[in-house]
Image (cartoon, rainbow, N blue to C red):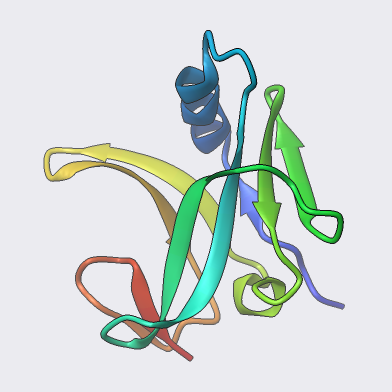
Length: 108
């Protein structure tokens, strides 16, 4: 059985802050693409849902994962980190054999 990715309350809360006051709140899309310094990279952006997306909901917000990216994100945790080096959405991916220092590129 494949476990879908999960989203932390902190990530949903940050997405709610981003969408606060927006006329049309947007969902956060988390996708995996070929490229980056380790073979695959994450594409994290605001987007509208597609018909075949997995939609994860919480705190009145939505996170989208397309069916092609879903196997690469099985069991992953989507979070938000606010650190001295910057604030960003992060992905803890148990499928990644290695990753680069930037945290957006990984290999399987």
